[in-house]
Amino acid sequence: MTDIRIEFDVTAEMRDGTVLRADVYRPGGTGPWPVLLSRLPYGKQTPMMAVMLDPVAAARRGFMVVIQDTRGRFASEGEWEPWTYEESDGYDTVRWAAALPGSNGSVGMIGVSYFGNTQWMAALSKPPELKAIAPMITWSDPDDGLWTRGGAIELGITVPWSLLQGADTLTRRHATDLDGLVSSITGLVQDFDGLAGGGYGELPAGRFPAFARHDLPELGYERSRREPEWARSCRVAGRHDEVDLPTFQAGGWYDIFSQGTLDNFTAMRRAGRSATLVMGPWSHTNLRNVVGDVNFGFSAHSDFMGMRGRLTDMQFDWFQRTLGDGNGQVLEPDTGKVLLFVMGINQWREETEWPLSRAVDTDFHLRADGSLSLEPPSTAEQPEEFTYDPMDPVPTAGGAVLMTDEFRPGPLDQTAVEAREDVLVFTTNPLAEDVEVTGRVQAVLFAATDGPSTDWVARLCDVDENGLSRNVTDGIVRVRVTPGEPAEHVVDLWSTSIVFRAGHRIRVQVTSSNFPRWDRNLNTGEPEESATTARVARQQLFHDPARPSRIVLPVVPAR
Ligand code: BEZ
Image (cartoon, rainbow, N blue to C red; front, top):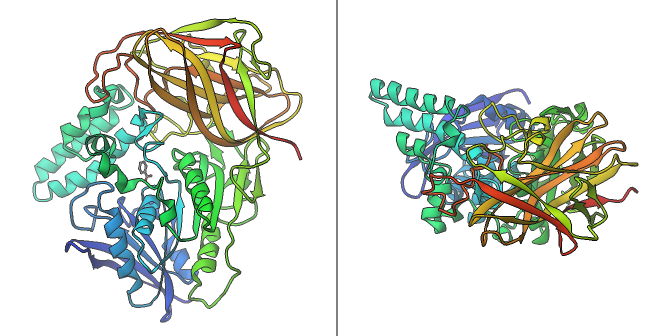
């Protein structure tokens, strides 16, 4: 390959006449080449693109690369309405890209997160030339990680994302009015900078005042509540049968969409499609080896992958298998693989399935003496009580978060969280041998509150030999109950793969908030769209033979 030619701002007319613009990278020579297409709202020339997809590297591998600004963003015309047009614009763009000079007529799509979802939406629209997709760190059901989780609002994602996207919207709105532009952007930046200092706490959380203040579209929580049918515009869950394509999913254990990545994979396998899965110890924006406070070893880095080479090269190899390439090389057809990074032992492991059928769901009981025990309570143990004050919520400390930079993702020291009186802690004895947990984790809590609604949060932690506790995975459930009546609540902590090393201890935290990652339940039962007053709740957690609160861990037997 001697050269690469780049054409900027190539126009594509959508079915309603709106013009979208793309940059097209062609390998040297005349082709024809298979096309790799990305459709994103973040600016087709932002440096972030090169981190996720290096178009030059892809062109050198014999792909023609098309990177398009989605509707209403940067070089493309139209109104910015997150998600609304991605299915129809995806269809029109695939067909257009397949017909570009140099294309061999086969299109694959690649990209992360929003532009992982634009792949799914295009695939659901079934353009005949789309032959494969490689969505990475993206969701399946927007009400499991994008807009809400367990019924709580994903405030930590929604608020900064919506404000950040506002910069391009305001720039377009004030294109001919410099003073207006300066004052509107200044106001937006002020709100963004003020989030960690109190801005996240604006109420009502479900009609977040800053969005109206700047007249900006939001990520979609609010619109999906007003127009439930519209939520379909970025929901993949329930529609996988409609996608008859091979897929390559990649995600991270500390990614905000880790469960979505796994769910998309399992649904595609269930539908009988070839599906590949790669799960690293990564967060949404960090595919390197140090995530949060933990160095998982250089093998974990997505540019190394334990000597397998760069993740992007794995994706290019996969596209070469599924689409062929313009360099005339033919590789074996893809049959679908599973590659998991097992934290704790910090090793990649090849598997053939997810979830692992050899994992055994094992109950670890939350006991009144603070132990986490394989033994269920044999007599009625005293319930534990704590006070949950929404005006003094448990602060977010790590996890699968994507928030303003004050809130780092990944495994972090939990000392300050665990010192609080509104956080109950249950811990095993030091482990005599390694215990591997790989799969989906659930907490079953028998609990009561003295109001009509509250939240239950459960967090799995790894406590090292020095007593330092770090979060592994967590979840929340928002419940409506009869005040004072005990009820069973299941908290979905999503999935992980970790070996708790011999000498470490397994810990579970139980509490009622994780703010500002999730909006606070104000304990009044009022809708999130209007609730602005809070009440303090008295919480009870039960541990007795009839109400055995527990965490269910998928334990993988040693081979
Ligand atoms: C992303 O594209 O990274 C993204 C999309 C929606 C919410 C948060 C992040």
